[in-house]
Length: 439
Ligand code: ATP
Ligand code: MG
Image (cartoon, rainbow, N blue to C red; front, side, top):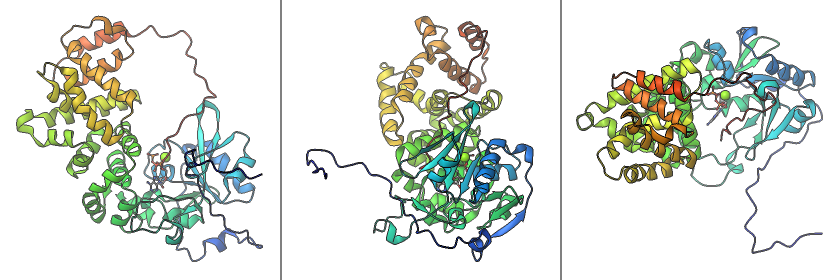
């Protein structure tokens, strides 16, 4: 029975559309599939011990079932550059449902594009994505707008490489042959430690302006150079950042800071004029050292201290990161104002709107901005028992250290506030790690 659509109901949500090519009678071999695609294979045996054994298991099982499967993206890049990958992603010719059929511990996620997550103990997730390609013009909305809106088209391995952002992010690793598959000159760029877009940088940044922030993140975190034409295109297209999906912008700002390279990232962001688009309040503060009495030195001092803290502790609270980022201009706006809360709110409201800062974070920043001057004045009072006391101590410590002042009082307060360590440290091992949706 067909249900009549009810005009009073809201329109249905935008659902992903998949283009699935018809199955061919004769399945071509991998060699045939790669013929004429400009593939370069490089013998580059990666350190077996550095490769996640579960990710390797996923690749091998997919291959045994007759699919192509490779390690791909950030993990290959990081291993080639001598770093430790955060996570291991797999790209495969298998469709999401085929992947699910092969792994019991698998769930399909994603609304815009479907990915398989294979879950392992300790919350480990190996993300398995079917090869995709950029949709052709006929498959996208007909307009001049380059902004990618739909990318749910399955494709071949080389097409999957070419849709990626930077050459160093588009390398595939063939575990069996211990070879790196390169369709876009990523290997020479790894060797030269250079960030280069795949294709025209202006086009790639206009398609997805968040790539500008990603380039800054990789340059800062991995200490890479940016190819001059790419750098120029980032500066030229920085205004496009205002058009990107705001939650992605917020997430990417956090990632810049979580990478433990806040100092370098924020400096690049400012220098390239991207900060003037995303956080004009902070950018203007940094521009005006005379009015702020060396405010930029205090800000960048805080950023390096944060980086050191990230290296020592491994993680930092997002609330501490965001408060530290905005502390100096916020303090400038609120210092000496009778209605401190009002001044903080007035500063934060447009920021919340522009970068889609979640309420939870914004409220925490407000409360910490209220607590920090009291902590610095030694007037702790009742908020020593609130959940934001420890993050507020972290911020107060950064503020003091960036001004070259002693932080011993903060250390003492932290020791008092810290509950004694639990006798048994229990952590649910079956809890899957949440990974941020990419786009
Ligand atoms: P990280 O180590 O920070 O996770 P990553 O390169 O793995 O870095 P992810 O965001 O995990 O970054 O994305 C995985 C891969 O997906 C990238 O290496 C890249 O090939 C591709 N990718 C991610 N974001 C984009 C994008 N905006 N445009 C094109 N390709 C992208
Ligand atoms: Mg990654």
